[in-house]
Length: 122
Image 1 (cartoon, rainbow, N blue to C red):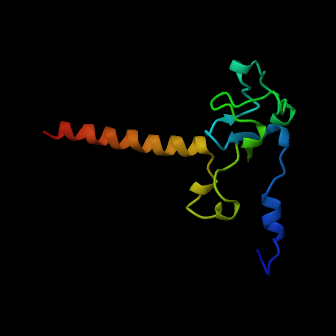
Image 2: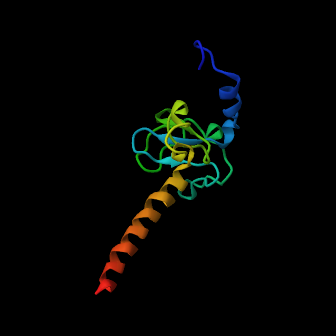
């Protein structure tokens, strides 16, 4: 941001996405509606966007909250975190939540393997 205006580079890095592919999170319980998965329990087929769900009949399958309790959290492959912080943190801030899980739990597995290898130092 230069003099209160976005630079061309910042605008170019933010790609517009189709709102029909966005995931929605229930603010009451944290349930995430992903249109790629649908909800088998409620007979909602994969590929049905959240905006096409019945606003009166649809309820959160976990806490029974209405459509108004859900907020747009963006597409599945969107990096988590605030947009202005994505360029910091050695590139880790641009990872998707799934990639961060692999990094964290892979690190735990590696540390555990090193710990177990200490028993072979006898």
